[in-house]
Length: 139
Image (cartoon, rainbow, N blue to C red; front, side, top):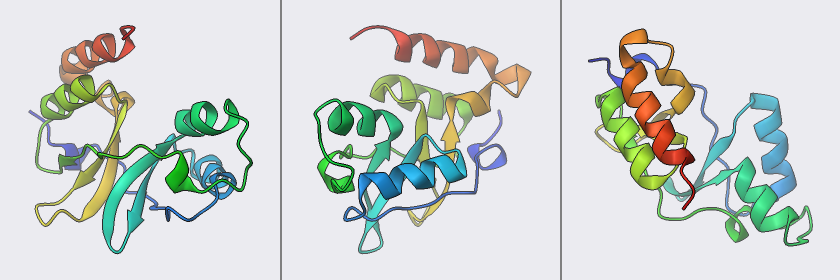
């Protein structure tokens, strides 16, 4: 089974919790990212997604200068780079997320894996399809 390090994106940016959501959104647009890890003092403390910005900021009438820390998701879920697609698909399904930070065994951020990355490998479609069906179910 394929390891995550073979299909993850290594182009990963980390944003500060004190960055404005407008600047975070610009970084998402420029890098075509849907999720950015949030880091403080060399640790991942959460993630911010385009959905977090839309639902927790824009829909609530918050200003574009709102800090990332005010709308980010805490309790970060991540996977190790030597884990399999199936491991990541299970984590995505459990956490109801489509993207996960990928860390090495020293817990250093090395990439991001998205549900869409799995479908590229035809032999890996089943775990991806199962994860997608779980993520897409209404709560």
